[in-house]
Length: 584
Ligand code: NOJ
Ligand code: NOJ
Image (tube, rainbow, N blue to C red):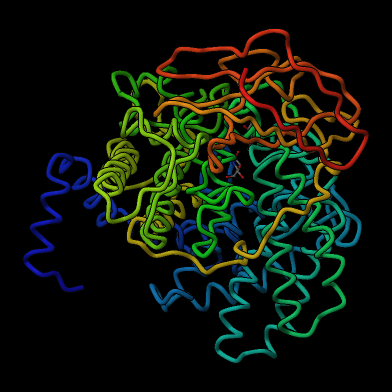
């Protein structure tokens, strides 16, 4: 890289205030990246120094015997190899080829191992973990976990696409495709079945991370199949990809965050959702909200609420303010090994923000919507909705502040990384000392992916840019977040409200049913002002339901209701509906 003296000075000027955090992040990654790389490779059989007993290409989750993590999880392994494959295919490390070949061979074997979830053709691909000699693990466990096959397909398709670019079609068609096809057939047939979440605890009709990575796998699979002439799967995968995408929308809730699971009796705020966003990042998809891209208004609103859930519960976060990094964990109610912050969860927040910075700079603007306003307001209180081009001072201020914010999460991880650089699974919520499994392979992978994102290196696209939400979505939702399946179908109702507002004032909707936040002004749904003075929102409402509602104005914390009486509407039995109102 070459820098002019001028750009160096400008660079120093813009980070001067925050020199502390950025330099901490710089030095953390400089020191930790090589440690993470070798820590990760040490846990891969058969040559890894800490992987005793693991077959070639098998990733042990951690060498820890207490808790005992000397097993291979399909999820952890796929995420680790996604990181390795990205390193190799992006030209960052050309020494990893033999590990990738060994992983492919190991997965081909593992897929065929009959296990408590079934055989290869009867559900066995949903088995979450195996012994490290690739025999079945037969103890009690939260099974099935249906994210594994999708994550493995995503990693292997990334690999296949690279090999195709090298004209190695034969290997892709004869060796990779049969493995990938088994996983995609499983996803296509089973995405709607109940599953344990990635934390192996909640069994429900859906988990956001699982649904999101399943959607990505089918889209990438369709393109790969088409490219190599395996067209028989295309129509089936295309139908199911559209259904999965519809289902994905139903996790978004009216309080402005993604409910992680379709059940489970928790707040729903969960690292699950942040991990989903970074592992379905597509640098060509802009800030698309339908696929919950890292810089989408939904994913940013979700990030605010997810991070806030940990600020007050962990002692290590005490004294931090909303614009500073914090330690975050799986979900606030977590009690596993004391319920502590996780290295990989905290780094995932930073990664989502670095991914966002990549896209904002690429598209030359930041768009603030009513949904993302609370995120941007952390850095620019009272910021108005609208577009801020990269030529504006606001863009410069925001991107600098968000980079600092992201670096703050890295600084937290740096602070609680012991000398020597070993990364466990968790660090104590009260003292910050490492807790639970040592040398967690996934923790090391999360350092590599966050570092890439911070360096402006993005993974290959998976086709999110050409995804559109089917208009028939409204009736295919699988359930209601947090409360198990709702049983009935919903219809998408678009509410348009004509209202002139003053700068900083926004329009919200609430009403008599769950979908409208049960008359809660705090949880009222924010309307978009994209077509100002028409404010709009589309809400999925149970078909045939009669309900009452009103619009409200919020301005500097002050709430103004529309005049009485309440408005009333009956949702049609099917299809979609548009309701046009004006402020009264
Ligand atoms: C082990 C699982 O791996 C972990 O995710 C879970 O929290 C604990 N069991 C407790 O159920
Ligand atoms: C527990 C985590 O909850 C789960 O996601 C992971 O797969 C296993 N540990 C192994 O690392």
